[in-house]
Amino acid sequence: MIDPFAAGGSFDVIARILAARMSEILSEQVIVENASGAAGIIGVNRVVNAAPDGYTFLFGSIGTHAYNQTIYKKPRYDAVADFTPVALFAEQPMVLTARKDFPADNLPQFIDYVKKNSAKLQFGSWSRYYDTPWLRAAQCSYWRKSHARSLSRRRTGRE
Image 1 (cartoon, one colour):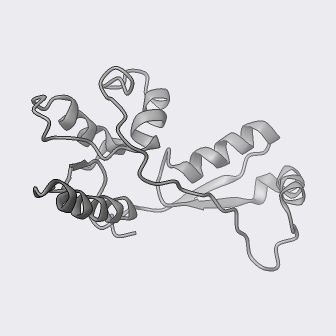
Image 2 (cartoon, rainbow, N blue to C red; image 1 turned 90 degrees about the vertical axis):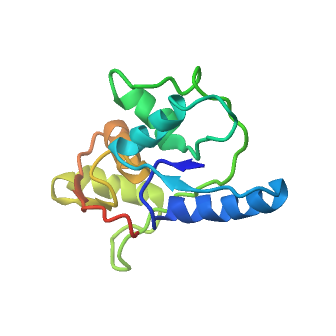
């Protein structure tokens, strides 16, 4: 199983739990290999270029199969033509949080506040670019005509 993200991260934990269970069911060891970098493209390409022997498969995500296909002008793979979906293994709910003293108690109030104060607002994200929180914030900025600034941090792979 190729995990296209860094070892020790939340995606890696899910991959290893799934691999352990698959090993039990298949009576054959499933090994997780981390091939991270370039928003998952390095690991994805390892699977695309692997021999079609049934032993190499991708533990993909919305990032590898949707975001990368729309963000990059010339992605190195075609998520539809190069892959066959096998199973949905997890869903990720998104939660919007703010400090307890933030002057909004619900989403409409939050949107109104962001529209009026976007020049001085910031939001945090675990990635520098193109992770789910970053894309959601960009999408909301576009829809709501606001422009909060991203305070992305360096990723260590241990989040």
